[in-house]
Amino acid sequence: MKAVVVEKPGGPEELKIMEVPIPTPAEGELLVRVKAGAINRTDILARKGGGSAYKKATNRLGVEMAGVVEEVGNQAGAWEAGDKVMGLVSGGYAEYVVIPADRAMRIPDNLSYIEAAAIPEVFLTAYQTLYWIGKLQEGETVLIHAGASGVGTAAIQLAKQVSKANVIVTAGSAEKLAYCKELGADHVIDYKRAAIEQEVERITDGKGANLILDFIGAAYWKKNIQSASMDGRLVLIGTLGGKETDVDLSELMGKRLQVTGTLLTPRSDAYKAELSQELAQKILPLFESGVIKPIIDTVFPLEEIQLAHRRMEANENIGKIIFRVGEQA
Image (cartoon, rainbow, N blue to C red):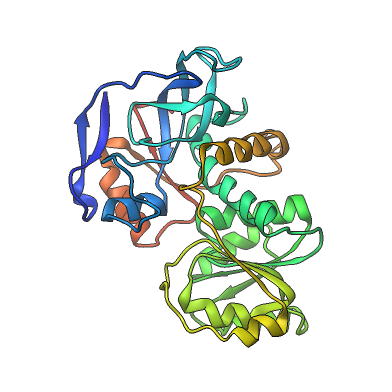
């Protein structure tokens, strides 16, 4: 089968299409013929050599896919060949991949494979961050940075449709801010033109945001602390703006803040399975009804995976960058 292989850490040019053996499903696994997959920041970090959280004993990338079940391993539940599935995987930039059966999610009938490929990583991350970690309550105020990113667009929809939250987002262009508004954001902040903490104070009448989802890290640390409400929660899920910053512990204590860091990719198989099952039960019906939708930026053939990576690194996307395998997905 064809698969994308990284021969050595580096730029997008290190992504090579090669012939590798089709994997065999072990007990409790499904072999899936991949129809589409997506590009994630995790892939960029892994391609470059990444931090310890991303290093694996493999030269294969790709953490999510959508496709059709080709073969069912022993003890793999009620799945059958021909079932349409999506989910979190390892080595998903390929024509075939194996997935633990308890991590597979059935694709709603109204979604294409391309649309389905835009769901697993970002909606699982957003759901985990908003609810399992962030404990978002109905009617609270949530500040979502990088609102036009894949996780950002997912988080906006979940916070608004599931929790009726007051949603504030940041982004860096009028186009991205307008799209966030279309998805349900109540307030938008252009971080290039306005002081985020001052805008949050104005929007919330000085109360601050109950929950903050941050992909940026060090560059936004002080802004986040100032933007947080009393007893606020800050969840760190990225370090695009740096990993190291000065911390004034008295500020955390004074506001009684809870600060949590998380990554989904290094989590255990059991954690991912439980999260996937809960998302399938509680959120996939909202996709079926059209209340929530996958947000797709662009679609590349697998053979143009280098271009897909370059687009993500240029921060040009609104929503997910997808690759398709074959002509129809």
